[in-house]
Image 1 (cartoon, rainbow, N blue to C red):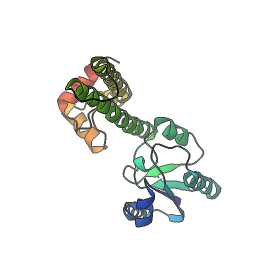
Image 2: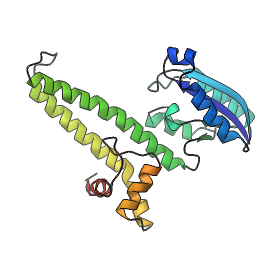
Image 3: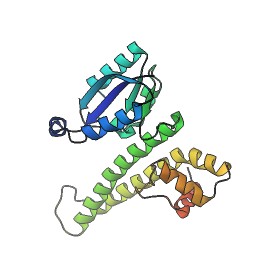
Image 4: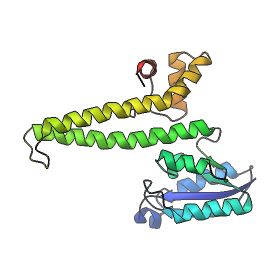
Length: 214
């Protein structure tokens, strides 16, 4: 098998120092050993939020040209954006993540959705915390403290609903295989998927997700 390796670091400082890059290269080298040959390596110094990445496009072009598989150390090295992952999955280039080589397309899409959800929740919680600070008398930009908190709470609830709707097919599929709530929680944790709050799954959190209205 032929591979094209793609690495990404988030800042110019990390790119120059090699921080995180050596770990990615080691993971890719270990994965490809005995499976095939790495024909080329491409390194991007860019934020995970941005879709426009010249080095990634160059890696995809090389993979298509050599009929090779794009290999990455971790799924989050590509992007925390569902649309980006979905577009890549629809491209003519196969790709594999070393941390989850057995993942199918549904698993990859769900993991990307979870990552994007986590980013959205961090933003919403920050806004809610700022609103709470205003209520305590700390002078900030928006004088409508209660209104801001209400809006933030509503958005958090909506985000949680979207998260549950995204993950429910996988959870229901595991349940249909005969797995208990505890076994489902264990499987989700094994796959690297976290709850809406970023915690590990428990039987109760699986039950709450299934009970949540989509």
